[in-house]
Length: 335
Image 1 (cartoon, helix red, strand yellow):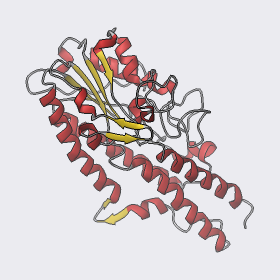
Image 2 (cartoon, one colour; image 1 turned 180 degrees about the vertical axis):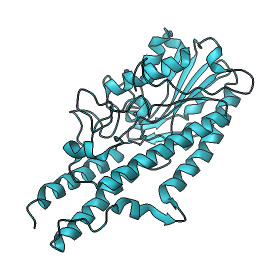
Image 3 (tube, one colour; image 1 turned 30 degrees about the horizontal axis):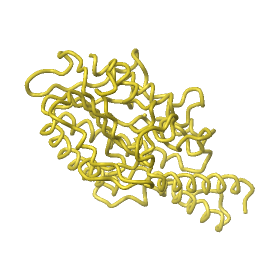
Image 4 (cartoon, rainbow, N blue to C red; image 1 turned 45 degrees about the horizontal axis):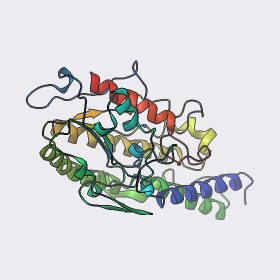
């Protein structure tokens, strides 16, 4: 075995193992990356009647819906039931509620790790119980709704895991043939390619978009007077894959890191499109989170790498990330 192959294989095996463990812990991609004021502002779209940006900021009742990127998986303190939802008292909904000075009875967080769009209208089973259908928390009195969902529908964490596995296979093939070069420059992209300029991930994103469109219609029916904010996902990886070398080494081909960036952009693009079509507000996190991805230094990153800081979830926002997202969301709400 070539001398340089052993550490790369070890890192890739570890990467795949960590991601697989994360996916079985009700984690989603939920994938899904911001800074406080002074960074790229959230994108606001007006409804048919009037512009949300021109109206006074809502004061509640506020309901937060979403997956693990909303819930704040493994960020202390973990609160609420069921515990398997991994809901944090320091997630961005809690910080937004605090920033709006909402009383306890004016705020309800029903987000849950691993949630898909179907779990908004149906109960979601988790490790230690069942999270009620999230949309049931909405009422005619609700005035503010934030929704962060779609990554699990698109299978984004599974895609990241498969990329790690495909790159491992490619490395092993290279070792067997006594070559230190990859068999393919982008084994993960090849894995998901289906021809006609599309791929399996894109099809899942498109399907998730159809489901999200129905969800937003349901939200509007249940809470017709609510201002609705669809929260995008923060950037997981930098635009330049080379900056990930200190964190990921050569475990994932640069072209495949680019593929993952492209897929997350598709996911956020779908969320933006569906929010605009429903007259909701899309809160863009991709711009504000630039430079704060998983490959940034520990003092800068808002998303943890595959081998996270102790106690945190891999490929998920940390407390700093949740705080930053709350700043962007509050800026969008207050105008």
